[in-house]
Length: 49
Image (cartoon, rainbow, N blue to C red; front, side, top):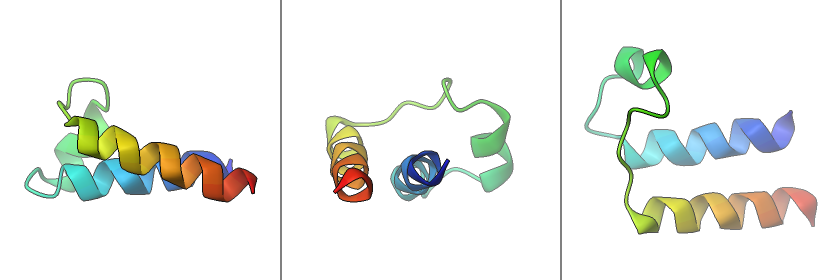
C-alpha cells in the first residue's frame, strides 16, 4: 500500500497542471510522459529497497 502511495505521488507530480479532482476522477485517462514513468520506477525501487 505504501508503494501505491508513492506511485500516486509520482503521477501527481507529472500532472501538476491538472486539477487534483480530475486527477483522482480518472487516473488512466491522464496522459503522462516517459519522464513520469521513469520517476514511478525509481519510486518503486526505493520503496522495495
